[in-house]
Length: 320
Image 1 (cartoon, rainbow, N blue to C red):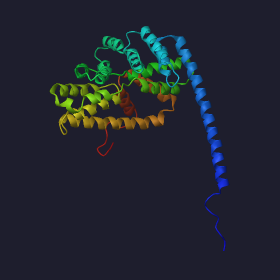
Image 2 (image 1 turned 180 degrees about the horizontal axis):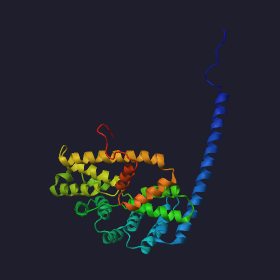
Image 3 (image 1 turned 120 degrees about the horizontal axis):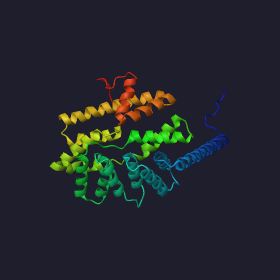
Image 4 (image 1 turned 60 degrees about the vertical axis):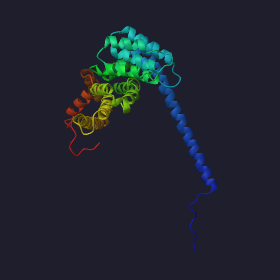
């Protein structure tokens, strides 16, 4: 009778496999470390060129590239402050200064927020961070005051399109990367910086606060302002607040539900378009042009969908 060989490997073969795996992993780690080191050197070189250029967009791009462990946050604040000084009337740069300041211990964002109020008084985002600070102090009166300020504004802008366009062009001027790499780099660093933490306003507009007539009215107006924000992220936060602030089944509640569905559908379709086109330089050039022409991310996405001759509205059988 012929015995079948055991399916369990011997201890020696197991040791050999473990040793081989260890060597392969060590090689992977070494290769990855080399790639990271090369990337860091290139990034540092690009940053040096940007700082040497000295114009507002280059200084802002340098501040935004200075991310990750080991980066001096004071240097980032110095660079973005220099950018604002070069172009004090640009609200997108002041907003970046606010965002970078809020991430550094000891930096007081209030004077920067006052500057943003002055250069862009209609933007409700300028009052946003004060809600979080007031909530941490348990200062309900201050929370209400700042919610009312956002409610009375006409827009909620994070300057998404503007930031990506300016940073991309600044990176291209360094001649250290091609258009696609510059665009993807600018998009990545902008996404990490320009959006505020939305949780404080979500925490403010819920529960007992919505049972108060003034609080409810302000949260409804805040929802309306944010749902017209310049990014899908801001819009979806506004729609989430609207669903809390209006009775389920009401016309306003259903409007929020439908608007969210349309937003998700367009983001889905645009994602498919981007996956097919992102690696092409021509797509990058067109995308930058659209972001220059339009103020909001939503307008850019709608233009992309129309250009692809696709339906901008979800079919009746489409599910999120």
